[in-house]
Length: 219
Image (cartoon, rainbow, N blue to C red; front, top):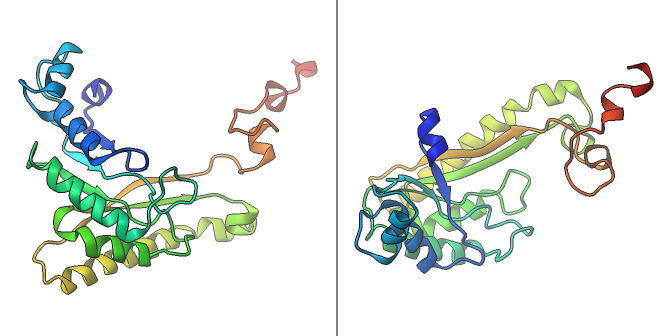
């Protein structure tokens, strides 16, 4: 929060929807946005922040369709949990902008089906849906073809149009006057290829060893 204030940015906070509960999500909003006089707002004040943080943007979990996630949910389970959380969170602050978890990426076998089923459960209680995408010139992603790598912006365009189409479909299905917006809140280009050469054989992402940057014997 302090960093965002210093750089003139608006924070976007994410909820734990895996092992976390709806009660925890509501407490998080109360801590950040309620003025005073409650358990969690008084804890914020005890931490040195007398005024509320007034955080507007909240992600209702993160990549909840991913098998790598602890507490992974099926689409309709997640959608119902998101709906319940949104209703309760808005009792604390009605100005929240809430973002439902869209598909983790176009590579997912449930891509778009996940988005549709989630929004059919919580469309009226959320304001946006998330999109995530990462690109790299690797054998897995581009076949090591630089031309294909440089054209990956077309995949992002397709991702946007297809997710927007799902939102419009559910809007029509529910005869809603509300239109959702898209939150492309995870995207980037892989700086280095993923694999042993990126982890230095240590099983985690790591910067290059000094010897890889330049030959010490030549220094």
